[in-house]
Length: 430
Image (tube, rainbow, N blue to C red; front, side, top):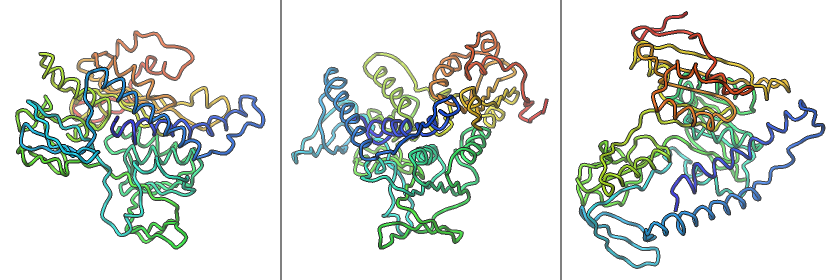
């Protein structure tokens, strides 16, 4: 119980993020007068034992408190549609039953995708990395999305030798270009990650000693102990019996309208299976609004505009709203405010670690339509900013807000002069 997020996603990943950041914090301790500080030796097995215990605790919370207290009957097994109003269930105890209902909601989520290349069976994904018995001393992370970048940062922090391979020119496609470039620069400056862009594995060979060799399309090879693919996710539509009810699918996903309704009137879908925004809080919003519509007498469409999110790399990247590129295309006339600096925590001990803050404003209305930050605690910061942006805050509102000093976050309310602007979608340097 808990889906990808609780079991093999956000929660265990964030625990690994925390673990991987201690060496960096301790490395700066000398600059604050702490002599002889060292991170010690990371014990993978101990961490995994603690992690598994925490996930089990959360599973029980969802099963025995959240669902049970709400009167939900949990039936473990595999379900498949049998027409529009029936679901056949093969229960985990071997018995079978059929449920009937006025409405059916499909919320089965997604699954990591791996390309069909020789040796792909020797690789792992973000599912399996949480259950490896031993920490890979050398790992290749393949992909350019936030999952690949996050795990490259995590494993580097935990002391593994990390190679990040991405077939494109720059990772985090879809994010603001300044944030993408800034993360690349910070990774190159402050980590040991071997970043290889324009690199695509052609095959993976398992050696006699159990190690792996990644052969790339450009003829190079990398020796490692594990290869983790993070090259996208597909919907888990297999064996759901969707065709029996006439539910349309697109690729591996289920298209829905603004009410999460499929092409079949009484069948709905929410979460990653719909290929909208694959984030846990978004799925929660979709499910909650569906419940409000079906059982609360309300009329609530899903709303995917101004959804805040965070990439848990080092530094973290927190975003809400439009990228500069998308804002220029949609709003045409925009102001862009930017500030790059060393946060006090890092400047004092002499670390070359930089933060980047960026605000994008629609000039015609003065509304803040995008905020992007790359800094420590960006996720915690952008959640609060996300409320203001969602409410329609203007740049004047930001300017009228008194900053908290000394913090990095005060930069959001002290940037007064645009770095540059766009007029009719074209950039104009100030």
